[in-house]
Image 1 (cartoon, helix red, strand yellow):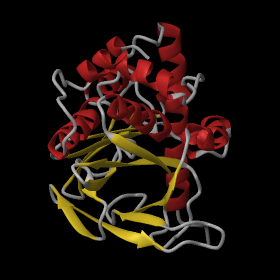
Image 2 (image 1 turned 180 degrees about the horizontal axis):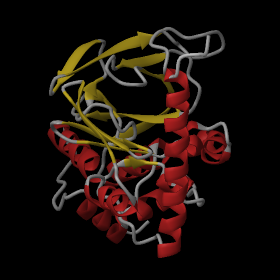
Image 3 (image 1 turned 45 degrees about the vertical axis):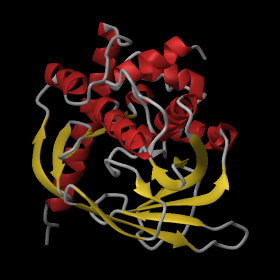
Amino acid sequence: MTTGTYTDYLRRIGITAPGAPSAGRLFALQRAHLEHVAYDNLDIHAGRPPGIDPALSVRRLSAGFGGYCFHLNGAFAALLEHLGYHVTRHLGGVEDDAASRVVNGQHLTLTVRVEGEAYWVDAGLGDGPYEPLPLREGPYEQGGFRYALERLEPLEGEGPGWSFLSPASSTPRVNFRDAPATTADFEETHTWLATSPESPFVRTLALLRRDADGIDVMRGRVLTRISAGKETGRREVAGQREFFETVAGTFRRSLDDLTAADRDALWARVDETHRAWLASRAAQETPAAS
């Protein structure tokens, strides 16, 4: 990969002089990445999910597009290594069950060692920490969001690892193993996540972007703002024009890869799914006839 590609990547996240590796600069890089590159599965809903080769992800992010953890952390790891950081990729899993010890391989996460300290680094959760966390057990707080890291006792046949706890999140636990992982370890899971009708990524469009004050989340046509771990705003995106303005504005995602026909088809899919969700909610709230 050329130095020019990484220059474009740095320009995308608003960094012009990254400097030599240091803890402070690592923190600045993660903050910048989260603010400028949203988590999104838009390409899946547009019918053309990209692969997870890190070089491809770097090029796509440099061009203004996004992705989910395999793309975001895959590209961020490559960028950090290019800048001289010692990066380890890890097999992880995002869990709805706050007590789960499973590592299902549906998440790629990173640890970075710099200035003699190891940090947990993740630009691919969407609603994760704004800054890296020291890889040490204990509670942490960032901008009113409460987190914790604890050692993960291994299940049979698995090595030890770590758990990141975020009680206010819809996915309150991230587990990952100590052992290093490679891109190949995620290929099969990526195919399932990007194509299976059972995949949550296929069922629901999601965009998330973290900033210093909170998190913007759009699932389908519902736009939510979360601050200090609490929902502070929610509304329904009114129509196609506002939907794409939100994607480009709030979530800073380029739309240059979508033709007018692509946008019409994507909006139709999002709107249909949203209407089905509304109908399902109405049916659940309607009392059964006596």
